[in-house]
Length: 201
Image 1: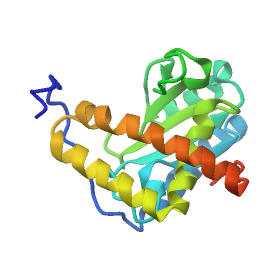
Image 2 (image 1 turned 180 degrees about the horizontal axis):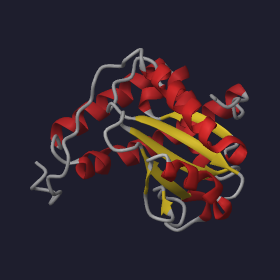
Image 3 (image 1 turned 180 degrees about the vertical axis):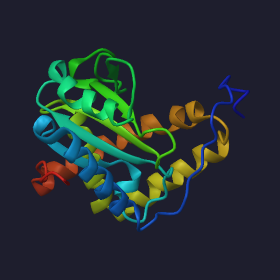
Image 4 (image 1 turned 90 degrees about the vertical axis):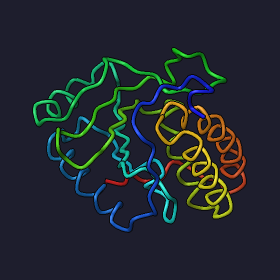
C-alpha cells in the first residue's frame, strides 16, 4: 500500500497497548529536565497519546517544554545538549492546515533523548502560541471523551495497518483526523470552560 502512494519505507509503525508506566516515565524525565534547565522552562507537560490513559500509542514519551521566548531558548537547549540530548534544526514548524506553514504560532524547537536512552521527544514551544495550546487542549479532550479516544485509536490502528513500514504514510492519514479532533475539542472547551491546566512538572 505504501508503494501505491509513493511513501518510502522508513521506520516501522508499532502501536502498543497503553502502559501504566508511561506517566511515571514522563515524571522521571521531567524531573531530570527541570534539574538541568531550572527556570529556563515555564512548563513541562506530558502530551501526545502516551498521556491519554487507555489509548494505544507508539512507545514514545512526548514532552512539551514551554518557554517565554523561542529566540532566547539557548538557556534551555544548551544544558540539554551538554547532557547528551540531541538537537533538531534551529526551528521547525508544526503542521496545521488553516495556518500558514511558517506561522509564528506553529514554530518550535525539537530535541530527542540521549543516544541509547528511553525514546523521548521534546517539543519546545513558546507560551501563548497556537501549537502550545493545541497540544494540551487535544490531550485533555481525549482524556475526557472516551468515545473520541476509542475512535481515534481505531483510526491509528487502521493507518498503521495500511502503512506498517512508513511513518510518513501513517502521519499522512492521521494528521487531518487530529485536526478534526481539534475542532471537537474547541467546542468541548467552550462548553466546559476548559482553561490551560497547571503544569505537569
